[in-house]
Amino acid sequence: MSERITLSHGAGGKIMMDLIKDIILKEIDLKSAGEVGLDALDDGASISIGDKTLVLTTDSHTVKPLFFPGGDIGRLSVSGTINDMAMMGGRPLAMACALVVEEGFPIADLERIFRSMNLTSQEVGCPLITGDFKVMEKGALDGVIITTTGVGLAEKIITDRGLKPGDKIIVTGTIGDHGMTILAHREGIGLAADLVSDVAPLWETVAAALKVGGVTAMKDPTRGGLNAALNEMAEKAHVGILIKESEIPILNSVRAASEMLGIDPLQITNEGKAVMAVEPDKCELVLEAIKKTKYGKNAKIIGEVIDKYSGNVIIETVVGGKRLLEPPLGDPAPRIC
Image (cartoon, one colour):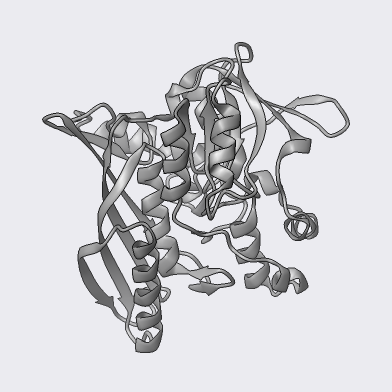
């Protein structure tokens, strides 16, 4: 293991997970007050209070640039935390945020960020109720970092480990939109005008699926993209996952940008999509319900859970062959979320 922290340690792939397991978990008391604790390595934890189960999650956001087509760091920070709660079945109740801002940061930009945070939280009725604000000297920080913490209420906790053989895999929309938008915008690629981030709060979409029933596991494919999300789900549930490359929804502009940059769109960050495992007899009904929501119109069934290749993801290519979809070591681009 490296003796120093690198960008890869924060990229959501195998390198980051190894750091958490080998260093952080060894130094922390892993006792949990609910079904899910830190040792589960999920995006949140559960807290049991009488007959109610709360979901608690926290996330920091360092995206560069702060403002990009389709969103900004404010919308990203609120959406990310709402989505982490939603992936565990938690209806978002309230949020807190902590901002660290660089000296000299424009007040107008700060107002814009807070306006975006407020509008995003209003979409799902999850108010920002407390927070903290700090300033660091100029040059000690790149603009602003936002940490958001959310609490939600779950009727039933859903974890990555719930999927089982026979379940169908649904992705709620096109893959790679956010990461490719940030990269193209940051690098000044000509296709940037055709790319828009998918950053969005997904509770409405998730709630529609939960109302139908049959959802066994969920994951938002953020750092490490669809690839990392599927591999993490397969590993935790000790099952195999078979997906069809031809069924994965990818915009032409995202595909073109990925080819120009030499980056696999399956490994790039999404901030407004969910991966769901659904019981086969409920799958079509769940898909229909998702498609009626604002952020689920492009949802598709992309594969299924299988009882072989435990812990692995197999992709059936467009030409009919099959190959192992190996988990990424990290995200191919830093400062995406």
